[in-house]
Image 1 (cartoon, rainbow over the protein chains, first blue to last red):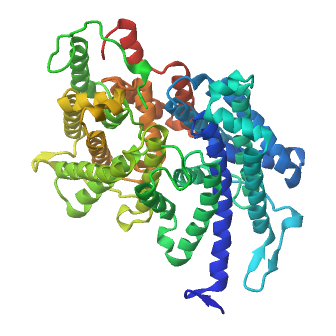
Image 2: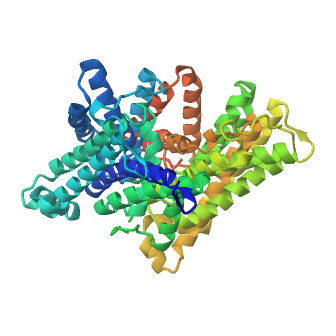
Image 3: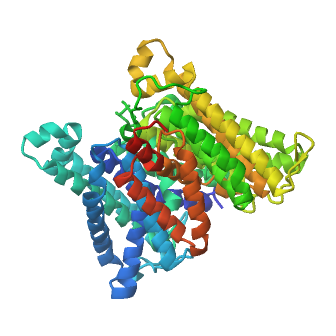
Length: 295
Length: 329
């Protein structure tokens, strides 16, 4: 058996892949949080709950309506995105004039309500969601077995992250968004409907979380606490990447997923804490985060 | 950046209110009423329930010191509460030391942990401070999950109540109650003293206008850090006392939902008010007590109260009363 750094190669690559998968979810969630934070100045504490709802939406589509995985990959983000838009319009938008901490408290409360309701009706044990047949199985790469679904998750997450980045950096809509983030008053003066941009941004960030939820459904069982397990780590990643930095979220999301995976190989006891330890080091050396512009 | 909770600040009626031991007259009356309730209620209500209320109140008062008087929202106060509980439970059980000493050790643990974590977080403000404290508390949570002395998922159970000061047996609920009540009143008065000291005035100045406080020569980060350590030490004491009262310390204490609970308690009572956290503790603890039989509905109700408070009721109960009567409470 091939050994790398005294570790069997299949174990190392297996954990690397698991790290990349977690990293894919970290990146998508951190990206959504960053986009929302950049535009609304609100840290969306309901992000984990919305991620969970994305997974539940696809489970419901399958079990109540017989709609399969691939359609729900599109439908769930749209449904949850619309729900997010309603939340923004009816609740969050009332707080923009106040201290931004109120937005944090409101979304925290919303997360409690959503997770509590799902726990009431679906219990906390979790429900299985099968991998679609076309993505089942694994290929032998010679040095390791690669489960096809896991490769698909990493690929899909990368495509979505890069697409989001391109939309924000290279399109006309993205240019308006960036301008509205920089100086909303001036952009409004040019006749651009900034509140609508804000609403769309929130809906987009939420849809990203829901998309991640659909991808996660076959890997982790669909349960009300699945967002809870991720979101605190994702907050640390947003701090490491730099608040509101788009590229920072993607790079640190994947990067820290890999670091976490590698820690599981070499020092498993620290695997749950390593991301927070990295955060401490980053805070000491670069208080604004690796890619941050904001103070 | 100013982080004042504008709604919570209520102008007092008199420009120069007469102060009684640093209390305004309305505050002094409220304090005496609270003292009366602390003395009389254990004969009317179940003392174990009241002890939970008192320690939730002390925890909320400690949290309120940061949000109300320094303007920093900590979302990681569970770390200090939970670690205080673990250390008190562990020392009382393993070493069999005096319970009062165990409680003080729990407070010291909260303070020392607060010094380290606060050092990392204190230079940030606003949302970033909330997120960093949350993440650091999560680190503490995972540490407690892995560390052998915490007993993992089981926690530290069957902690003896033992004696306080070597002779005061705590096995009876009423004895335990008087110690808990004493700790609460002492903690409450300590916070009051801190707020009304020259140090507290500097804190208020920092909250109102930090660049100006800096330009006047104050090292604002140090002031904020000292306030954070006081707040975390008292949180540790609250956790430690709860652990001695109930004879158990578990992961619940360090879980981030505990941090959410204390935010909710303070928000319901009134951020930045003196008596708000106490009233909030009465409300949220009773609510948990009565809703406990309905399982997850506790979480749903807590979330709904968060939403309602933030949207329509930002001053909290005491804040609204104070605003209505134009008092300072």
